[in-house]
Structure formats: structure tokens, C-alpha cells
Length: 182
Image 1 (spheres, rainbow, N blue to C red):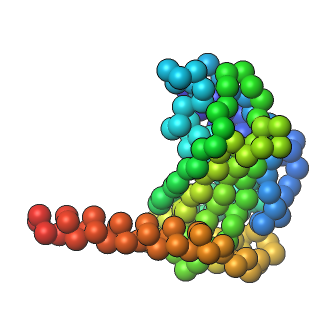
Image 2 (image 1 turned 180 degrees about the horizontal axis):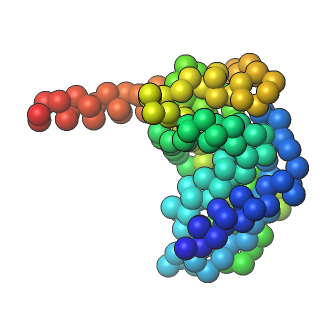
């Protein structure tokens, strides 16, 4: 329920935070609420992924890419995500979520989410996602062109390319295992 309320808040307030370019960084100031914590009394590991979803929603609404995609009937779908935790976020503490698009390839859009407290990155989530239409996946270059500026993808960092390649290999293994059983 809390994430639904936060999503609604993003939808109702994104215009107040101002527009962003397709490759700008979005900033959300958030708190760790009681529903976010686990038995260790810090933000639950799974909650980082849900909050990252909010960051992508805010970024996509503010740079108008997601608004225009929704109007076309396209929907974002996360493919893979990974998190790196370096410092706990404690209950009721304020932090900033910094979200940016790292770039894209022929299939995926790559997004980075940094959870920052006192200028320290406490956690980082990276997500690769795509948009789907009734006909199937929409090329990321077509999606990003909805920003109005037709941006070129920045060069993806080497670690993102290696991570994405690993995700592709895992997908291949899972598909092969399924095919062998059926």
C-alpha cells in the first residue's frame, strides 16, 4: 500500500519538480518509513528495487518519454536488476534517490539509481528495461526519441556491458533448461 501511495505522489507532483532532459539526473528526497524496514531495523533489501521503480517513473514523467510512451500504449518492463549495498539506511532517515539513464542498446535501456545520504552512496541499483507495445518490444532508440531531442546513447560503461552480457547468458541457460524439459 505504501508503494501505491508513493507512486500516486510521483504522478501528482512530478510537474512541481520541473522538466528534465532525456539524459539528466532526477533527484527525489525520500525517507525510510516503518513499512520499509526489516528485522534488522534498516531498509529492506527488496525495498530498494521498489524505490528504484519510483525513480524511473519520476525520471520518465519529467523527461516526457514515459508520458508519450504511455499515450502510444507502450509499457515499461524491467528485464534484470542488480543492487550493491554499502551502508544501511536507518528508519526515519532522509536520503536522496538519484536516477539517470546510462544509455541503451538495440534491446535495453539501462538505468542507474543511487541512494545517497550525507553525500555517501549507500546503495546502487542498476536496471535494464524495455518498452513493449501490442506488437512486441519497442526499439530503445525509438523510445528515447520521444524526449523530443532524439538523443544519442552515451557510451555504456564497461561494467554495464559485462553485467548485461552475463544476464543474457543466464537467460540462455534458463531457456535451454526449459527446452530440455519440454
